[in-house]
Image 1 (cartoon, one colour):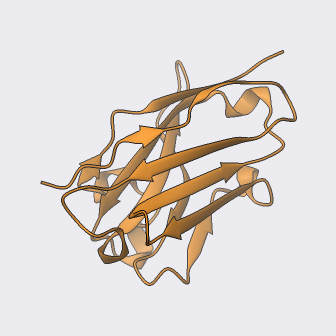
Image 2: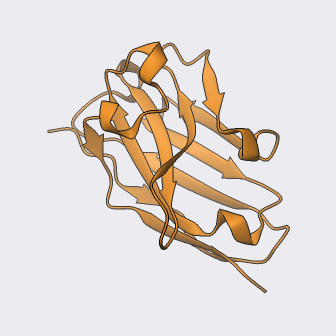
Length: 125
């Protein structure tokens, strides 16, 4: 059974940085599309970023482009979400998800089969 637990959440000041890690077990991270989603209180789950199985193609939600970077560490069998220039609007529970996802469905959360439990990121002074 594939598992994708997240780690690295916490409290960060506005303008600060945070690194989230999604450490896959039960499978090889290079064999799946891996996405990051987030959900803030009272809001729907939204797409943040994703990396395709090939590792060469990444996707980002418009509001995070230039601030967040998704990458893969094959040696650690993990996908990393580096978050810079964080602001209050980035406060949410962040989820890692993995699956076999066709390109057109990359941003659709229901296309992913395996989900982590979520990690809270709070941006506040």
